[in-house]
Length: 263
Image: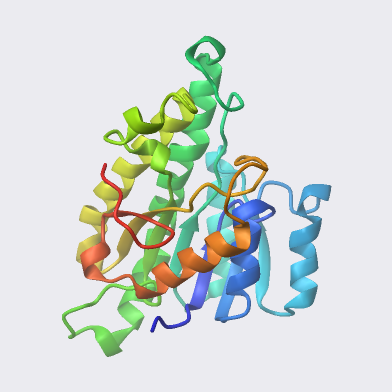
């Protein structure tokens, strides 16, 4: 049976959809959530602000624009100040966009779409992980109880979870391309998968787990109302998977039920 997640957890894109549901379900565990979004005071973050009232003292809302390096740096500084001597146990890179709208065929996709999607879906998570690395290292070093055990990596110790997509799988692309071409989105998630793989190799010396998870086709603004999966079920599944991850899962791409997806 999987254990509950705990410690300090940072979630990007936390004001709606999967990100909001992640915050909601994590707030019920023994964790403090740093919920990041672009406009914390805006109307789009009202549901997130309501959660801070529902779970007093468990959620800190942090302003973060994942397309802006200065904003990422300021958010990291704000989190570092609040955490103090503690470390960051889990970073969930959830924020992402899809442009132009699905099915996004070649004829509708331009350079601006490709660059904007890549910046938010790939460069943002890359920079966030890079800047938060000292806090993740601190968490890994603090947990001395598992330091001498064979299986050192877990999301309760120190980990990065990149929310990826089945659409980023190069091998599976021929099976689902006709349904949704999505050139910018597919390319960005394939690149995020490589960032995941690279960081998993780089950060394993610090005992930091890095894994990518596909949340399924979920009913959100991005997924649309035809999607078969609710945010509640998707997030419940992903958190169960996260709580059971270990060394063997580092650098993998899994779905919300724990099945491995080929690159």
